[in-house]
Image (cartoon, rainbow, N blue to C red; front, side, top):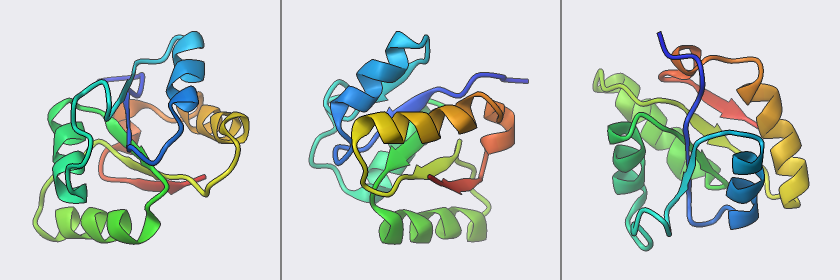
Length: 114
């Protein structure tokens, strides 16, 4: 059983979000750090899944569809968190609600909206 959620942030998410979460002790990897900038959405979710990380993005339409495709194909992902574009501190506040209330195992194959 895995308790703590590790995150992978899409390139459209402000890097300050990752920095602020790290300051609170969370394991966060950005697309830039992973040298995955410019990859397509399916590759990004596959990368997050390979690293057992939940994926944080602002790209609702594409990642709703990808999450649904994973379910239909019987594939597993470690969670998709879709954030409305807001200032980084507001995104952090909403992310922390999930990170402090949901285990990594509970987020598997889930799509959450913040």
